[in-house]
Amino acid sequence: MAREQRREGGLLGAIHTIRSWPARINEFYRETRLEMKRVTRPEFKQVRATTVVVIITVFFFGFYLLLADTVFGRVIDLLVKRFRG
Image (cartoon, rainbow, N blue to C red; front, side, top):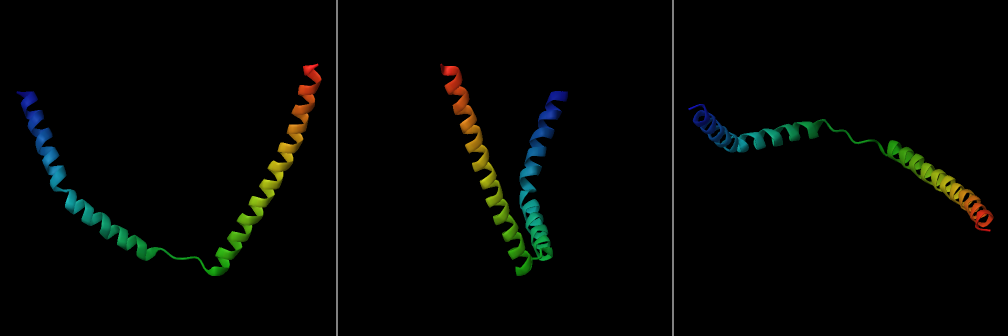
C-alpha cells in the first residue's frame, strides 16, 4: 500500500514538474532580462588600463618563465653530464 502511494506521488510529482517547465522557463527569462538591465559597461579608459596591465603581466611572466627554463635547463644538463660519467 505504501509503495503504491509512493509510486503515484512520484509519477504525479514528475508530471507536475514537466507541466511547470514553461512557467519556470518564462520566469528565468524575465529575471534574466531584469538582471541585464542592471549591467553596466566599463568606460574605455578602464578597459585600456586593464588591457595594459594584462599585457605587461603576460610579458613579465613570459620573461620569468624563459629565464627559469634556461637556468634550470642548464643546471639539469650539468647534473646529467656529471653523473653520466
